[in-house]
Image (tube, rainbow, N blue to C red; front, side, top):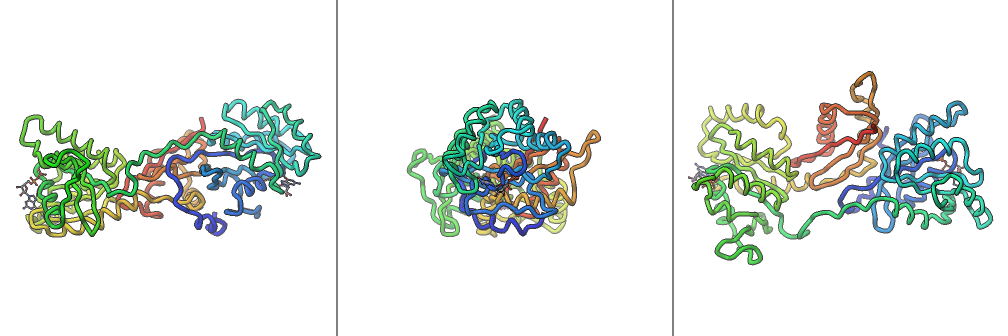
Amino acid sequence: MSGEPYESALVEVDAPPEGPVPVLAVVGRPNVGKSTLVNRILGRREAVVEDVPGVTRDRVPYDASWGGRRFTVVDTGGWEPDAEGMAARVAAQAELAIDAADAVLLVVDARVGAQDTDDAVVRVLRRSGKPVVLAANKVDDQRTEADAAGLWSLGLGEPHPVSALHGRGSGDLLDAVLAALPEAPPQAEPEEGGPRRVALLGKPNVGKSSLLNQLAGAERVVVDPTAGTTRDPVDELVELGGRPWRFVDTAGIRRRVHQTQGADFYASLRTQSALEKAEVAIVLVDASQPLTEQDTRILSMVVEAGRALVIAYNKWDLLDDERREQLDKEIDRELVRITWAPRVNVSARTGWHVDRLVRALDTSLAGWETRVPTARLNAFLGELVAATPPPVRGGKQPKILFATQADVRPPRFVVFASGFLEPAYRRFIERRLREEFGFTGTPVEVSVRVRE
Ligand code: GDP
Ligand code: GDP
């Protein structure tokens, strides 16, 4: 896949609403007007790839929206009409697309009526149990509307008369499509636009309260009147780089729970609850001592919570050359799975490099919120799969159909495939995604939807 035909898609990333985007598959025989209809659905915003020999239009996903709701359209056209085995092939192709979709738009040419191939696709649709919207296309005028009524015989409910070419009836059709698609769940995002929420984490004695004092002392600490009491504030507003940041659950840091019994339990409880409230975590590790299991456990908790991450190597003032060398090896060995996290060397005691945390926080948060346009994602994925196809498993080569970015904060990708993808291959995709699109400082999730 060349990047060329997708250029236009890059321009139209206008801060789309978050949340998983439902997928609509458009299926039907060749020449019934699927791509014309997809063009109609997309409006003037994006042109469907033309039928150029060698360029397949098959299963190309597009970002669409109607009535303020976003969805992904998968055009399943593009396979060559050939008389032999046509019905079976269309049905097989449609089956893949249907399986990946949340709802299906079946396009039938109302002027020629239902054909054998349509029946084959209808059987597949019935089996799938997916919601279906039936488009009776090429109803260009009032006169041909009677043709549409003939399609009740398919047993898929009301045929929606439409002229993909002229636009007649397309609004009503899209309303029906939206009704068939699941709502994208609303995003859980409290206080949008407020100060960024930071969790300051690390095992006892690593220097959390020292760092907080540095950060707060260097600039102004604002006690947040809305949270907790003034004597025991839950969060602290700290101004860094000229902006306020909300350090969550600082009361837990100040209280020094680790001096009491059951410290570990409460420390991990505090970590979990701070993570739930935070967008980004600064995990402090003691650079002067070997990394412990407690450090890696805290780092894993951040990744599992899907939060942006900055690793701060504290007590840098205590390092000698020998320890510095050790530390490099330790990082290579213990932190291979989170090489994407920015690292900042600091001294909470002296305040050395503490100011560098701001840029790292910004970088990680930007990675956390990155959205890759669907067309660009699939152009990239097409090249990746062509160069390195998924390994054969049980004598079968799993086919990768397409992918969408279902979510941001953190970025989550869903790859639609015809078979199981080895975890190693999934990690390979994640690695390549990172190389291509950055995602510094954020976990990235790649999941696979497989057709059974
Ligand atoms: P696909 O193979 O199903 O994707 O079909 P196309 O979108 O390529 O359309 C096949 C042909 O039907 C093209 O010549 C279109 O111009 C024509 N066509 C598509 N929609 C309509 C329609 O609503 N009315 C009429 N009259 N022709 C249409
Ligand atoms: P917390 O338990 O994570 O809040 O850690 P504290 O901030 O209470 O620090 C524990 C001990 O480490 C204290 O004695 C601090 O003075 C010391 N400490 C913290 N940061 C540094 C640092 O950067 N360098 C050195 N040398 N000591 C530090």
